[in-house]
Length: 183
Image (cartoon, rainbow, N blue to C red):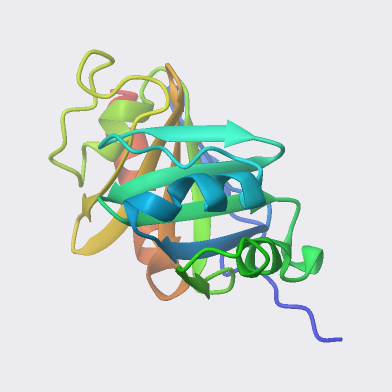
């Protein structure tokens, strides 16, 4: 079996105010489901799919991020060798849905430290104050010239989900933002 190395393998960086590192490998699905089937999919996946904008939920090593009225990104920690467990769970739900495995499309960058929000705001116009974007908040937004999915994991920590093909650009822009945040 071939294994794929993350496009961010070995990268780390930041400044005295921000730490940047590649997140461990994870399984991901892009999920579309109508409201009447959310409960069935939540049960099958082992995590409640949030139904309010800008929210996320975590349970059993899985995190579900609300991206739209019928759209979620579901992340399963533990790497690619889990197989298609998220896909299999969704398939076994018995509910009408659309699920696409995007495990190899995305990578994640973990941004932490007292300057984390400032580093992200170097390329993202979103208000990342705790009042506007509390712990657990998520959104699909822009970062420089690319689309990202942003999740606040702690008061001073974020997960930046980005397409693999844009990961070098995102890491570089975050590194610049981290340097600026330390000034």
